[in-house]
Image (cartoon, rainbow, N blue to C red; front, side, top):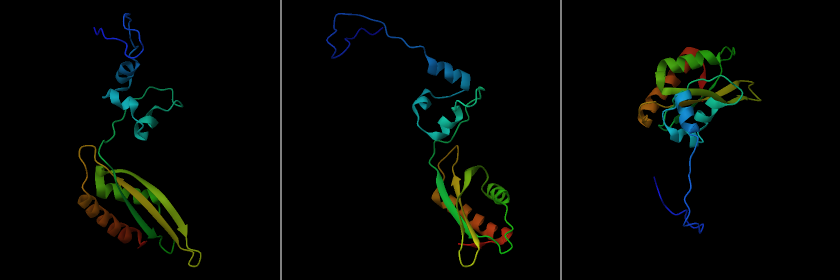
Length: 157
């Protein structure tokens, strides 16, 4: 037990009890959260797992503490317009494996003169186990760019 003054309050000759309910510890057990410090995190990857809209108790899904490496790939769609985003996502995940955390379309543009459509996708590379070197991501990104041009007949930008 700690018998220390209450600090600059001027109450030096009194003793009291301080206790907590331990709600964080209870939540750690309930949601399988491995580290109490996550409760003070403002990381959206942690916060979005516990939105109040879903009343069901779901276990915590771990996320990487290593920094992301974002790369964009932009291209003009084929003249015939045949392009399915999900096919592109599958190709990227097949090529990069577990290093791909997410793929999002960040821009879609129709050229006013040629009427061609351009899309830009941001690929977020991140490993759960280790930092991913820029050189490694650059090699994967080169293969992704070559494959998207070859398989989907797009024109890279």
